[in-house]
Amino acid sequence: MGVKERLEQGIIRVPGGTILVAKLADLMAWARKSSMWSLTFGLSCCAIEMMATAASRYDLDRFGMFFRATPRQADVMIVAGWVSVKMAPFIKRLYEQMPEPKYVIAMGGCASAGGPYRDSITIVKGVDQFVPVDVYVYGCPPRPENLILGILKLQERIREEHRAEKNGLPRPVREPIIIPETGATG
Ligand code: SF4
Image (cartoon, rainbow, N blue to C red; front, side, top):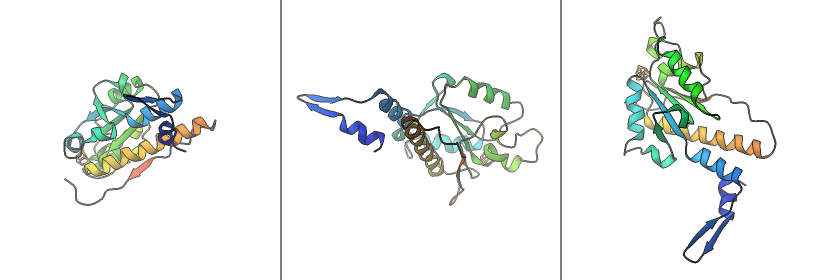
């Protein structure tokens, strides 16, 4: 039984309202999955698609995603765009300031592997050179739907981690999630 079903079992209707009785661990797992706050690292063209994902048409808020401008309150970092060699240490420092558990999404070919600038000596060949990446969303740029798919897959992973934690099992190994490029871009 999932966290959602267990939480629903604890709903008690009372005159004039509702009471929810649940284990703190279940509430925390539900909140962790359903309110991923994102530290945005919009560095170049992919950032426009990331912003479009948050705007009214794709409405990222409905998945509990909010952009935060501080690493201290962020659960996930979305790196959107190419990363210069000079910028990399600052991204790493901000990642280290995020509280655990924390996740990273590399959005676009540049953040995933250097993209069209792969041969440049000033561009890092993927953010996984200096931070662990959980989700690679390919494309140049990826469509908002693909970023959303990556976020939903990441939410599934958080659910699995909680299930393992609850059953006293070790956390599953974090295999990278790959969202391939699909359809027309832009
Ligand atoms: S993957 Fe393409 S769209 Fe995204 S930052 Fe690189 S060049 Fe720009």
